[in-house]
Length: 105
Image (cartoon, rainbow, N blue to C red; front, side, top):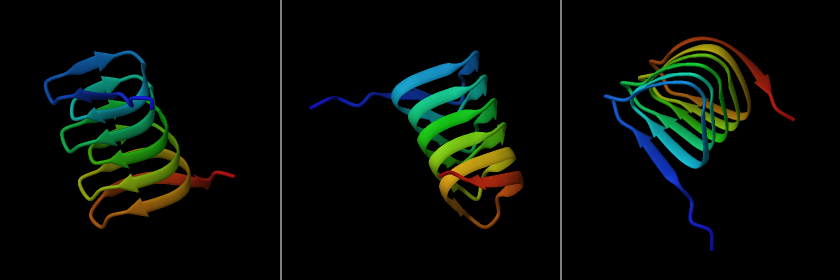
């Protein structure tokens, strides 16, 4: 059995540069760069300027960039400005969106 990794960036963390994580990444801080992981989960305090590529994405904070993910869930605390390319998309009422969506094949 392979152990899945999980990285956590708390609200006091700021990263300038791209992030690659083989497992999951949880973000409540600031990232200025692209994120590539199996699962990306952001929370209310997060501010991301860059693109996200993952199998599953949960957005709860601010994102200025594109998402390429099989499954995307946008929480009511989210603000997204970009293009979302996905197989499934769910959006909670109350989120602020300026988006274009495309269905992945």
